[in-house]
Amino acid sequence: MLKRTEYSHNTEVINAKEVKGDYKDIINCAVKDESGLNDFQKLPNTHGVAIPRVGIQRFRVPLNYKHDDGTVMNHDTEASMFVSLDADKTGVNMSRFCQVLQDEASKSPVDNLFFKRVLRRFRSDLRDYDTEKLIPSAELNLSFKYATKQTSLKSENWGWQYYNCELKGTENHLGEVVMSLTVNYEYSSTCPCSLSMAKQYEEDYRSGKTVEGNGIATAHSQRSNAKTQILYKVEEGLSIEELIALLREALPTETQSLVKRLDEQAFAILNGENPIFVEHVARRLSRALDGENRILDWNVQIEHWESLHSHNAVAYIQKERPNLN
Image 1 (cartoon, rainbow, N blue to C red):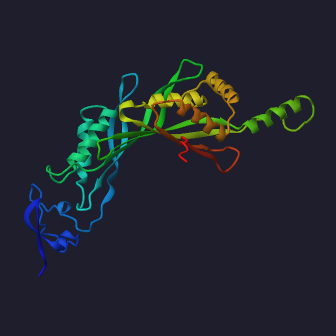
Image 2: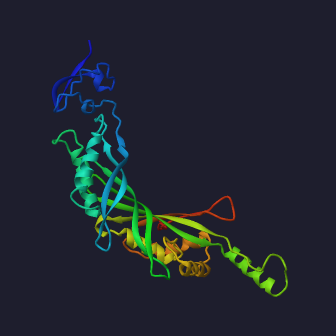
């Protein structure tokens, strides 16, 4: 005969086979929900293995985001939500992640305070019973395309510029919340060597040193991306638009959303003023990010999708750590 054990959160007797996760009797679960349906998720776990992060990914939901000019805009979002699971717990109520997120989203747009409320509710609402201590940690990660108006370089036009962004917040067992923001910043990069060789050829053609070609050479340039992640305290947040402005100051050749001929010429001039390797980009961004005191930590992945080669040029850089030796 199977050993039968009684647990403090449920007065019903629980079959030991169920406790170990071997649900032979799939019909007669010892724990029922409010409607009387079997609730295997609330069965105690005896394997003694905790899970650091468990939850759901790619929960799609439209969320409102408050922009720096005060307007609130809706952005299609994919949410990933996690909590830590103690060793004596079998699972978490996954639908509560979605309920909490949607409930808080109905009350206010996404900002740092929104993250604080959602994370605390994850730690509270995903408990099996109200008498239990708060879940040790929680995480919320939002991925979305952030749209802002971008003014044309010369003409009196503007267009929508979209940035692939991620906002992530974590709360630990002490109630401390740390935020991270990731922005993908696209820009144009003109190769310094290629630009120099093109201009050298044009000068040689004009002086009669060569008759090759037609006297016009084009430097190779390409669309490029700087995937920038920063960490900051929830109380001292850096907005998406503030980070974009920081990146744009370091890399002024941002790709354009709407151009007329006048703007296209201005863009060509701007690229000629800023020929850059990936190494130049890494060092420019290092100076810009280190100069912002609200940023606790940062890292950047830089990629130039080359028009000359069939491979790409890349660089990775992060905030320098103090030498503790």
